[in-house]
Amino acid sequence: MSGRVELVAWSDYLCPWCYNAAVRLDRLEDDLDGRVHVEWRTFLLRPRPDPSRTLEKFRAYTQSWLRPAAEPDAAPFRVWASDEGPPSHSVPPHLVAKAAAQLGPDVFRAMHDRLLHAYFAENRDITNAETLQAIWREAGLPEAELARAGDESLLREVVEQHNEAVTIGVSGVPAVMMVGNDVPMMGAMSYDTYRKWVARRLEGEI
Image (cartoon, rainbow, N blue to C red; front, side, top):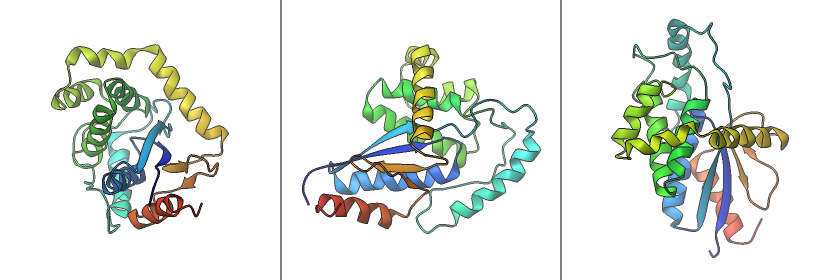
């Protein structure tokens, strides 16, 4: 194999299938050691708060996480047992992730993974400002840098990336597109599927 494959992945931090995709794509980057790079972009499943959503309803909804949790190479999930929540909307964790990205790609990846794990495995409301501040501190990042999440330019970037995804036909997430191929792969594929897809490109078959 030679060269490098660039992937663009649209994802939402409130999406359980995106958590599985993130774990698998992280592993792919690690296993192929520089021959594949994933650029994570925003998709907003819940673009605005829903005041009618109660904690009781949300807890019942999280029973559906048992389905992605049952996959053989799944991320760790825990049906909601916390008194936090329900989560308000998708925007806050995306802003924090983009603030982390401004500090470097390794910082972004660590925050990206931390946000997903905090929500799905630890039952922490990653749309809550205090919870996000705590996660930022736990990552060992300078507290003053979290102010970047309030930058209007980051909010514009979040909205633009979502709108771009809709424009090219992304209707759900995760969606992964190989640069040079305009058709996104929709849904959380298995690790082996992602790897074979990338291997074919590296071997010149796509």
